Image (cartoon, rainbow, N blue to C red):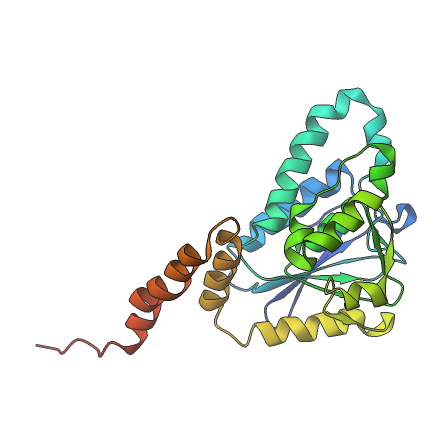
Length: 244
């Protein structure tokens, strides 16, 4: 696959790496970039050679968010909306584990991209925030609430304040803070660790993670415990049928 706004690479061991590649614009997420991310994830979704995906940015920024120049053209509204709706869902619902390697500022829509991934690691230069609230743009609240809890999510979404890498680690937004020159390598190590498990188990678990949002504990337990026992585990422990 060749893209104009992304660098895409398949690493050995089953890891795909997507690098947002508009460093001169701090990797601003344009309509084209959203289409290309969706296209890449769509292809990798069913690719048995890809078990997990890392997203990172070229240059000094992860991404500064959506390309605001496109919002000045009313003729682009329909495509802005449709590309955004699809892209957010494609990242959020991607059936394999995703890792955000946040190499610098992740602002507004860039913050959204990071929090739509399953795991986040960041460099000391990372900064997270929703400054768009100051300009009248509502923030994406729910995924952040699931990651760091209601109170802190309200704080960040309503105040628009920015937080650095240390605070992001302290509140559980990121799992690790890693020196810039080791960030991608560390993300690859995490990806390799994830892929020590069979892909089927990872995809089933990712499905549980996605499905239990909005469900009560009893329903979650019924699906994640009882049905697993009746299907996956039962199949594993049942003796093979005797040959006649």
